[in-house]
Length: 114
Image (cartoon, rainbow, N blue to C red; front, side, top):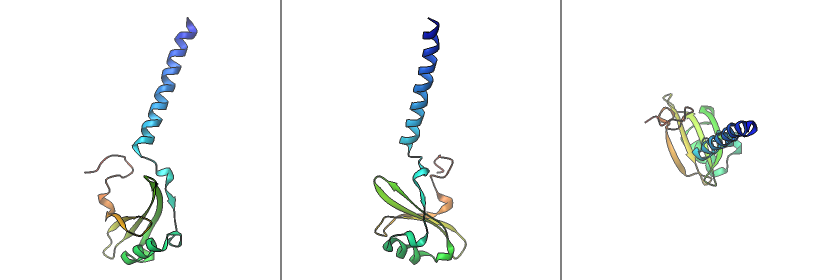
């Protein structure tokens, strides 16, 4: 009887741990798959699109990650007037999203900022 009383909390704790892990995975909070890049690592169409928006000196971060089976390239840069901006591109150099970095709805706190 005592072993049954000890087993139930252990199984419950394991189930809760697995459920929380699954929720984190499904939520898409997976910055682990972001890869830091150099400008020379970008596909030519993405590199050209980036350099059409800013100079190499103004780029603060370049990353790639797989979203929905597609590689997305994210570039964070500073505009001439000092505004922190970011843009996301597909592999063909098309803009997926672009805007002020301060307006990011999906920052590190995991909450919608709107």
